[in-house]
Length: 523
Image 1 (cartoon, rainbow, N blue to C red):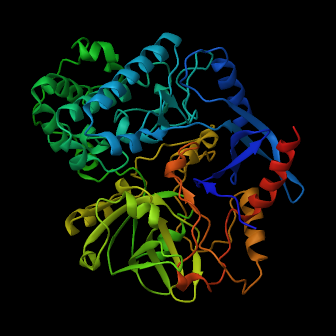
Image 2 (image 1 turned 90 degrees about the horizontal axis):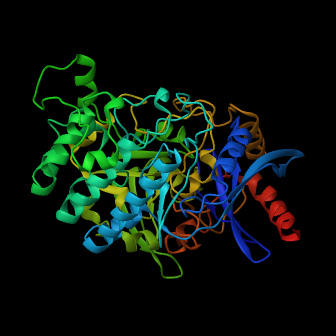
Image 3 (image 1 turned 135 degrees about the horizontal axis):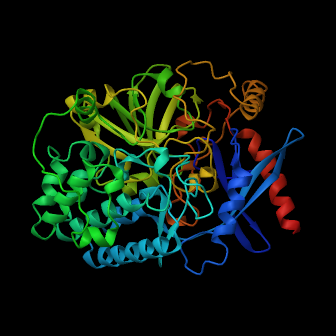
């Protein structure tokens, strides 16, 4: 019997289920997330009756799944069609007509949210679905008028946020900066599509957190200013970045040059703290050294940026004739590698070859559970399904990224919320009660929550010597409904067909999920 395909990772996994002919996305948590029920109730109440198509229907069920006699919450969501903003831009950044339409859709979205006093809090590539219209997902940081201002639970993705944003900025105006960044970026691509290939890393469009910290020295800002029709707006955004967040104007005012901070853009002395921040690499996720199995083991289930020097490229075909490729950073019996199955190879601009050996690579993605095979030993991996996940970099840049301070990643800082509603849809993140740096211990049996203790218990009871007939269950970063981007099940390469099962951190959900589907089918 095949296992259900899990989407995402982090603190929860999402499965698809069909009941009475209707398809749903079922989100199962595997870490504690307090306060979910209250927040879901507030969000649902605020969104009820809104006629605009920007939000997705969901239902929080506090006792949705039972495991070992204990009940746990789930979120049942409507299954929606569309590509994430990042995927859509990757496919259409050269299409001026589609970019013009998309900019118009964001303009309408901004006007709607502003008219209702609602703010999303984390507008970014992974939290917007683009189909016949645009839809917002991930309501973790959603602000509605009934909520108290200044009590935010996250800071959003730093590649789309003002560098001075804090939790006290939680309120109806917190999307202003993000809308400005998205609007200016889309208009820049309409004028110069080459900027996407030059500056996009899969987690941004053109600008990054580093650009916001020091716009005067930013190459990306210089490229924006070089577009005559956008010179003034690029300079305005630079001024906004260097000013207090309270000075961020509305999108309408920004376009019309109103309420722009009155400062002079020039190289000037800065504090040591700000200079150090600007000089440090601020990535979308924690940066992990490809040579360190231990560091990567601590990130299983998280989305990271893996940086390393390629030691081996193995390209072959499965026994069914489908191509695949492994890129190795560490070939020891506890190795680190990148998996690129046939779906991913189709997305790449160029397939990896032996000429890649010795070069440096940055790969962004979800860390899969440890996998053991007779040929490669135990390995940790990231699976590539999109061209934007993988980027060649210089040795100098690689060392710069690896030297970035721990915890400097541009991952949303979450204290409590409902990121788990739709997070596997795009980013693989989820809501801990507080975001703490991952443990560097290699002791995978330690449990920091009741749920993790269950996982550890099940893992220790795994039958030794169990034969694996397929590769580990695929976990993707695509949202529900992006069926064209979800990898289909594939058999493992011949070398893996006799490998030993490594145990899955989410195994206990399979049993509970099957029970859940049976319950839904009876309704």
